[in-house]
Image 1 (tube, rainbow, N blue to C red):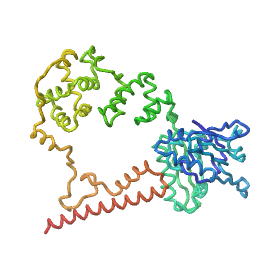
Image 2 (cartoon, rainbow, N blue to C red):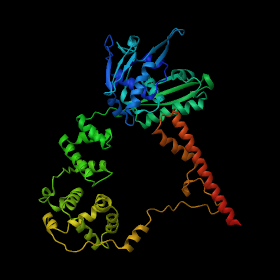
Image 3 (cartoon, rainbow, N blue to C red):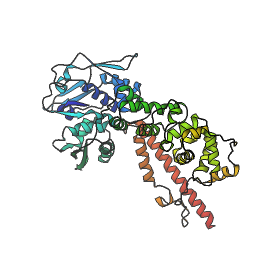
Amino acid sequence: MSINKSNILIQKARHDLTPLQQKILGKIISLINSQAKNFEENYSFRLKDIKEMMGKTTYHSLKEAARQLSNQGFEIKKDDGKTEVYTRWVSSVITSKENDIITVEIPKEMEEYYLNLNNNFTMINATMIYRFKSKYSIRLYELLSSWKTVGKVKYKRIELKKLFKLKNEYSRVYDFKKRVLDVAQKEFIKKKSDIRFTYEIDGRGKNSDVIFTIKTVKNIDVNIDININKDMYEELKKIGLKDNDIKEITQKYDYERIASNLEYSLDYQKKGKIKKDIIGLFKASVENNYKPPKNTTELKDKNIKELTFYEHIDIVIDNGLFNKFRIFLENNKNTIKEAKNMLFLIETRGESALFDSFRSAKPLEMFFDQYENINDLINSQNAQKTPTLKNQDKKKIEKQPIFKDKNHNRSSQSGVFEESPQNGLKSLSEVLSEIEETMEERFDFESEEFVKEKNERIERTRRGLAAKRNAGRHNHNRSRR
């Protein structure tokens, strides 16, 4: 999806729209025919269309952001340097409690920025706008897109601050770089933007210049065209598949194969046979074409050597062979590597332990290989009572360590934890860097919520590291006495 914007609007408009408002505005602009002479009476769209592209956003926040657009405007300083024009983005916003449809009217004053755009405009990839979280990333993406054919542009830092409506914020060059330029630069890379930029600061203080070098990135897939009907797309999104995965699957396989294997995967989940990894099951299912069998009689004529992992499980569960498989494990626990761990999992998790492919795949295969065909397996009788896992074996399994961190040692000389990777304790700078990276996924960079939580987590980290150092010194002093 692309939108056309006048370069005057991109390069001169001063505004402070939130990321949500900018994304909603992008949707509105995409509805406008840039070659038309007049605006239509109104433009309507569904919030659902935006939400699908944005992910973790509530309908309430989207609707509220759309409403606030009617009170938001921008300033443009004319070329004479004396005249300033203030215009609202939209003249009215109509919402409904019955549905998620938003209807907006655009003021006539906006015609010169959206209509009859034959030259001096930029075609912007709106898909990228929906990817960004920072409002400065969106602004810089549009701004630098308008100069990408030139490849280089210089702005006064104070001019950029005016465009972004930063009056008293980030007055120091360091803060402006860290909170605006560096944030956008990282997001351009992280979100796979189709343009990248580097910058340098020339001069000091208010009169410093920011010189951007812009590079177009080729072969970046910013438009995801899903070759599948909308209902199926929504079902695949519900199980947690990302757009790139959906695109890959729909390009490889036909609709019937995807639909049947999705039904197969959902049926397993519904019956409680699998709880978490529905995505992994579906991907394996559609790749190997595990069509959902109505009953295991359909599998009886199949060669026992050709059965898949999930067909093994189907036959075991649907034909009451679970206890027989358990006896097989008990009898072969000294010869089959995974048998003891599988027995422990069965004791604690029951039939769902079969879905642990890492431990059960090989034992299931060996269990089936005892028989020439599936009918022999199903019809065979075994009167042996199902054994229980011996307590001594259970204790041995429980005591096995999951992992051992050999590097996490206390310094023998100083008695304190060193801030180095060799002993497992990360340095404060490493911890703070991780805090910022994890929080970037949850908050807008400029929000009060981001700053508040970040500061709280930094303070907790400082106290935690200080406590560990003090404990180390205390133990060291005691040992010297």
